[in-house]
Amino acid sequence: MRTTSHHCVLGGDIAAVIFGVDGVLVDTAQTSATAWKAVLDPFLHSHAAVYETECRFFDTATDYRRHMQGRTTLVGVREYLAICEIPLCYDALRGLTARHEELFLMAIRRRGVKAFASTVTVLHAVRLRGVRTAAVSANRYAAELLRRSGLAGLFDVRLDGLDAAGCHLPASSDLGLLREAARRMRTPPARTAVIEENLAAVQAARRAGFGLVVGVDRGGRSLLLPEYGADSVITDLSDLRIGEPVA
Image (cartoon, rainbow, N blue to C red; front, side):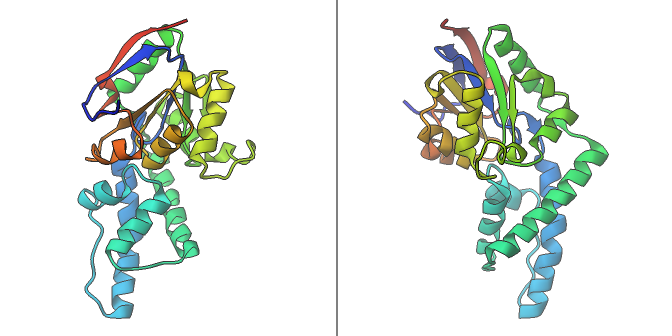
């Protein structure tokens, strides 16, 4: 039974856990929002000048939380621009997301990135109980985030968008990457939990029949996450209660 209560027990027959990276393991929201503002404000200003309309600027708090957080970069920017009544073709949208990734990584490499305080505690707790762990993201830079945050050594499996080609998967295939992570951990999806902020990844985990799908709500999406397939919704990994797995 799915619930929106902000706690979850991880145990029982769960033998492995797949963690999302952005918003679950590492805190990237402010850096990502700032990069989006640097990309979108010049674009919005130029568009307003060309079409002689009022210029709307990107708000790093409200606009990022409503449209970007918990979504892929492509889906997020497409939704935001739709609200602005600016339709763009796929190639133009990809150009904006590529520029965002460039600025985002520049900031990460200059200032670093931090894991959430609860992340390391939870990772050590599940590993002490013999539960296998994977970090999975469709973003191409997830491995770098794990390395720079000091988390890379806490996972049995690490997969991101750069690995997709080697797995013969589309670069944005959340479903394929989740299944591949479970396969590499030698754990069937039914005995594997997925903990994700990204709505598409939550939906993919539900479609694939993972044993427990936990949504992380850091942006006010408590109602959306169950609709996409989350069994439980938490606001932070500290809301997880670690039980003993069944052998």
